[in-house]
Image (cartoon, rainbow, N blue to C red; front, side, top):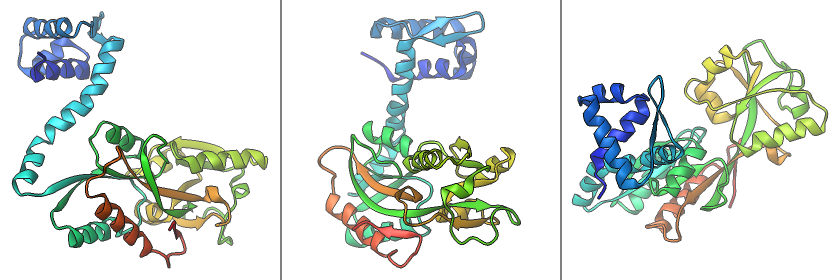
Length: 301
């Protein structure tokens, strides 16, 4: 039978890239740790590590186990939280949230659920849409808000937000209230690396013969630092994220008529039975409706 400590030992070796360094961190002798890893490999029937001149490297089986352990230890770390909720007769919902959600939206949603079902409590997990997809598939999230449509999951489109570009003070078009992709010609534009709208915009630029110097990055908290250090002229971003991460930059929206000029947000969940789904999804829809009058926001229902 596998023991959690053996998996923890392997995780340390994978992290440090060396049995000697991992042994020091675990306060074990190097021979002791080597024996523990050998026992784990024997139980699993796979070689997990390959010794090298500079330390160790993972085999294909070792890489697979390391990736799987991300979910295993996340579940283990949540045991106290789960027990605390159960002891208080509460239902704990792990909710995934990406950047770019309208200001006050999550707070309004949590309050709506609290009023409708006081027994539901939330654990908020901030992660990118792609990270949330993995967490949902591994059972580590119950419900997610994502900006990319997950084909293998249950989902419901909630709303879409207008995309635009931010410019430093004194740069960019000074007399424009809206932009088209052709206005980005000759500019170095930073955009998120894993959103369908950015891919569509790149396709639209190519179709119109617009030469855009795209720089695709994952960014949130350090967005302005990344943009400045990368020497970009502008950043493709929604109004909410622009106000949060680029408060001193001017945000100009893209034309509303084109579908690729909007960032969509879906609710997503795994499995057919989302516990308390009527309350959780109903409150999501009701919260979305509150933003009908925001010109940079469009409700899907």
